[in-house]
Image 1 (cartoon, rainbow, N blue to C red):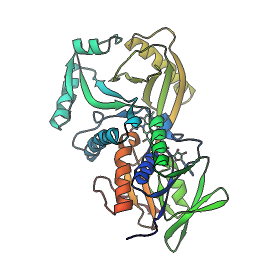
Image 2 (cartoon, rainbow, N blue to C red):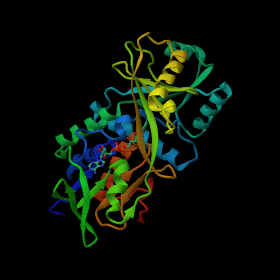
Image 3 (spheres, rainbow, N blue to C red):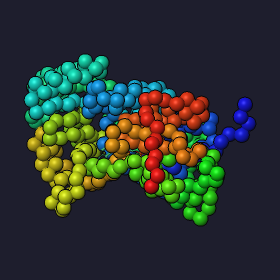
Image 4 (tube, helix red, strand yellow):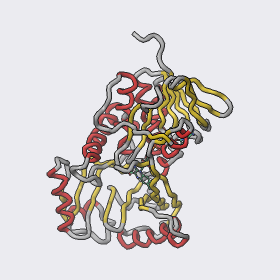
Length: 360
Ligand SMILES: Cc1cc2nc3c(=O)[nH]c(=O)nc-3n(C[C@H](O)[C@H](O)[C@H](O)COP(=O)(O)OP(=O)(O)OC[C@H]3O[C@@H](n4cnc5c(N)ncnc54)[C@H](O)[C@@H]3O)c2cc1C
C-alpha cells in the first residue's frame, strides 16, 4: 500500500487539463492545476465551436472508433456531473450539396453502426422554421451535443476543486525541472513548485515546454476561425451544417459559426470573413434585422499529422505525461478518464497512441 501520494501537477486549464484534473481529483489524487491565463478556457478552448459529434468523422479510420467512444463518454459525464452539461443542446442536421450525397452520408454512418437518421424536408422545415432554403433531406444525429467549451472547462475545475484539487491561475510554467531522468517540479515565476508527476495539457505550448528537455512531441498548429454574432431572438435549435455554413445558437441567442482559416491578407482576414459569412447566413436563415458580428477569433488547434491525439508518459523523462490532440472538446471526458486510469492504476489504453518524442 502506498502511504504517500504522488503530487500531480496538470499544466494547462483548457478543456483537456480541466477534465483531467477533475478525473484525478474525484479518484482522490493530490492534484494541482496551473494555467498562465486568469481562468479556465483561455487557450484555443475559448475559441472552439463546441460540437460533440461523430458525423464529421470518417468510418473505417482509427479516429472514428475513438470519436464514438468519446461521444459515449459524454453520457457517462452527464450521469456523473449533470450540471456540466445542463446547457448542452442535443442534435445536429447535416446536408450536402445534393440529396444523393446526403443519403450516401447517412448510409455510410448507419453501416458503421451510428445512430443517425435521414429526415425529410417536411420534418426539417418543422424543426428549423427559420431555414430559408430547406433541403430535400438531411442527416439527423440525435446524440450530438452543442456546448460552450469554456463553460464546461470551468465546471470541470469547480468540481475538481470541490473534490479536493487545488488550482493556480496567472501562473505561467517556465520550465520543467528534472533530476536523474525524472521530474522533480516546475519553475513558476521565480519559484520551483514540487511535483512527482507533471501532466502536460498546455496545447500548443507543449513543444516549447518540453524543448527545454531536448525533445519535441510532434504537435502541430492548425488554425480555425470562430465567429460570434450578437442576435436578439432564437433562430436555430440544433447545430446545422450545410455546404456554406456550420452554425449553432447559444441560450443567450449568440450565433456561432466555425470556419477553416488560412492567413491570407486583410481581405481574407477574420473580420472580412465574418462579414461575408453574415451575408451567407442571411441567405440561408431568416435572421432578425439587428444581427451583428461580435467577434472573429483565430484559434490554433493542437494537432498531430495522423489526426490522432497523443496520451501517455514520455519515454525520455520519468513522470512527464503528455495529453494533447484534436478534437479536444469531443475527446476531453474520455482522455481524462484514460489519463487517470493510467496514472493512478497503471492501466494503459490501446485506443490512443503514446507520445513518440524525438530529440530536438
Ligand atoms: C474555430 C474552432 C472550432 C473548433 N471546434 C471544435 C469542436 O466543435 N469540437 C472539438 O472537439 N474541438 C473543436 N476545436 C478544437 C478544440 O478547440 C481543441 O482541440 C481544444 O480546445 C484543445 O484543448 P487543450 O486543452 O488541449 O488546449 P488549450 O485550450 O489551448 O489549453 C491549453 C492551456 O494551457 C495554458 N498554457 C499554455 N502554456 C502555459 C504555460 N507555460 N504555463 C501555464 N499554462 C500554460 C493555456 O493558457 C491554455 O489555457 C475547435 C477549434 C477552433 C479554433
